Length: 348
Image 1 (cartoon, rainbow, N blue to C red):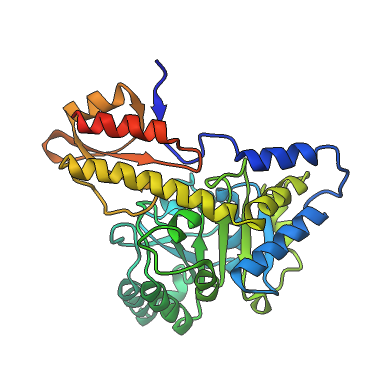
Image 2 (spheres, rainbow, N blue to C red):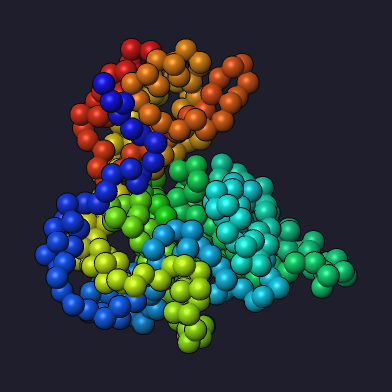
């Protein structure tokens, strides 16, 4: 019997509504590289939902490309980007940022999150050193919402981080690969308009929320920047799709009737069923997450039993021969598959 997969939130293809629209528009003839009516309409839909009528928006093929594009765009050539140690750009992007010539400067994380005091202390110490011109000066701050551990910044936390950024004239960039899962969490105290207000740039992840592929890089305060060479930069970083309308069309579908948020809410609801089952079974968690990523701590025996029927990610070995694992739900996670997992958890 084939195992049920809870490894990632991009194992399935795309939401049927997206596939239907792609098929319906398959023989349309449009200009390439995102210069088409679908991309323009998608941008306007995003502008409306974030409450920024003049926002600049660019589509890219994936998350790593979006991060490298935004970070290279926001930094001067000799500057680095500040991230927590667990940040995606520091751990799971194969040195993509460093390959563009920019250093990732790391701070300690607190369950995957950056603390504004840590950021302020680092910057004070950095500029107190008279030799700092011989070091890598930070030019921006990178955070993820939700984090690599499924944890969430509160509005107060992000406001404090942004205040430090403003004090030191740093841009704040939010990695939104799982933005939907964060915003639709029962623990979230922000909406997408708050995200747009609190940062200088962010991206809206489609790949992990129902699209075949693609992300939307958003600059809610375009007056701060010069975008004349942005298309060139996107192409240089491998993020520009020749058949760009395929990206615009997908984001049209995701945002014309709130499908983006419905997909994310479904993933979160399914994850909370799994979280409840582990909690009732007295199985602890590595992190307290209220999004679509859950990190239970299993004994080797429990791990052996569950892994015989389900695929999930081994996160890290722990003391006493225990292991932290990760279960991830998506827009396509079915009730039947969750019910089977819940039943298996109860039988541990």
